[in-house]
Length: 429
Image 1: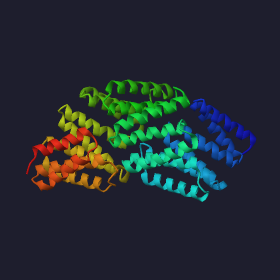
Image 2: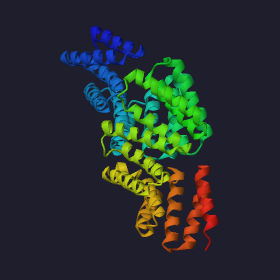
Image 3: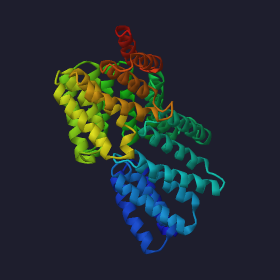
Image 4: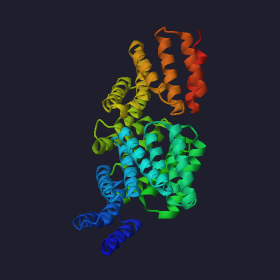
């Protein structure tokens, strides 16, 4: 890398460290063009990697283009470590964006892993790779595998950087999301608070990672029933995101969705509906109407409409969620089972038992095909739903009770466990 370009790259990284993303992005974009014009592949690789990291929080499509450019230039130089780093970035964009491609994400991770093995490994990139792998597995609802990958990442990062490094804090944030799905909410609160403390100490109050960590802590407060703390913390996260990116940013969709979930926990259904409708409008704008975030939002809205007594609307919006996941193919199929169960719940209210039966069977088959520790609550819910529908359609009632008993035994959420035990208490052979 020429001395002049190296100095400019240092200036870009200084702007990144000073939390000046717009200035850094403009400087990196011009530097990348100049590096290409001068045929300086070393500068091209490092600048494209930096540009991809800047774009990750704003435009995943642009970030992926930068990472592909970095990988191509690294391949030309025979720089396996740089190519591996670019592939990890590509995997994150493919597997954790609003439009996911899990097969491509795992392909990129496997290729990065092979390149690392070829050069004898690199602990820093291996730690990042394991973290991205965990994040992809979270999007796939494979939480047992995600927890193992994330703990490996944290072990490597802590050994390499110490316990107070930002990457360690980011890792605890991801871990908090995983244990949330596993029903380990006390651990979730500890991990999310630790993440926020580490990241704030490293970056100061006004930083994208601090905003994300603040939102994670709010979700943890909600999970343990501290709803006032959850609202207050979400509002703080929203203020950070708005200050950093302005009012028109997809992060605000997650804020409104989480506020809606808080109101659902508080049985404040009109407020929950309003928050979730706002979230949906933002998701449609940024991810499109047939995207996974819209489908997930629809599932919550279906529960809200049911609680408001608007069952026909609940059925319609749950049908929309199912349709979206079906159209997304294999990447939507990972979340299709729970969406089918949601729709079955609405159909049961309308006593449309025959319509619900094939959907409940399909949901159970989809969820049961996953690893046993992928999402135990999801499997318990599918078993209970099939038991309910089978009972109402005069199927094998002994088998229905067996499935409901398994649901009660394996539920990780106390409220969901109670649903199963209450059903068993009121349904005898």
